[in-house]
Length: 222
Length: 163
Image 1: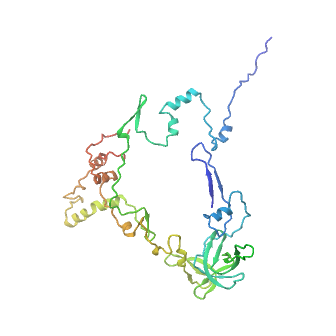
Image 2: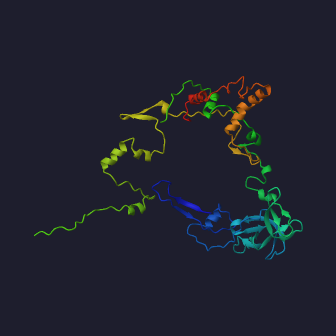
Image 3: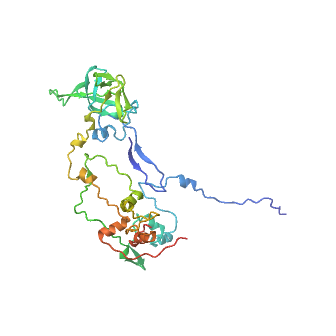
């Protein structure tokens, strides 16, 4: 991820340079939020966090996982939140700590339960649907050619949950509510093109009723 | 007694342009105007409408007329006329709904155009036996009678600069 603050104009007299920032501290705040901007404001330099590079990411929102370390070791839960930049996953209601906010004088403040992130590589494991036990997962291809997650121990396919399809606009594509400015399927897929032996300009001329009889003089290339 | 000149040193002067070439040329915080040329020369360039100076600051807009003496005369034919279709009853909207599955359409090639225009007639003629030994139609339709010259003439009539 790079935030380009200034780029020299694209012209022959300029040397192509950019003033940009590439090193960020990724947290549970998404990069477009105000909290992220505050954490990575101009002038802040944080120590580098070393993250194991994972080529095929296997954890999605709504996946059943088991926690392998900590207070909630052995407990199973659903994945709520994913932060791929840090290999993090937050499990709903598990691996929590309590914090109180708004403490003032005698008033003890309001107690909040907040989940702590778990590392995908070592602290969490996907469950095999056949026996509900933690397994290692690999991405393999089916006979039809689809890429699926497969449990290494049993070979059972672990399907991708429906919750993973959710975005800000819809829960699932099928349940999206069509708005005023959306083209519907019927209008989009209807073919209105009628092939005719005309160039684009000739076609427009017939449709607009433009008639031209003048034939241009012959031109020669030498 | 004058001594004979055995060797002569020809003094030459050179201007090093590498320093200026590698140096910073374009500052964004303050404007560096051009230093080269006399005031008269720079005024000449500014007033000449065909000079490169005007091309640099023009943004590529085509002129709508011509300078006749000191007056700028607008030529109506040079003003572009945008022909835009009437969108009355047009069903397509700016966005596409998420529900729509992907539409995969192959490229419309010249072979497909030929197929659309000529293939039906050819098939019918063949079945009815209206093709001669070489395969040419005995009752050619309007499109089949078209020669390359006539077709090109038709396309050129519109006046676009396609060909």
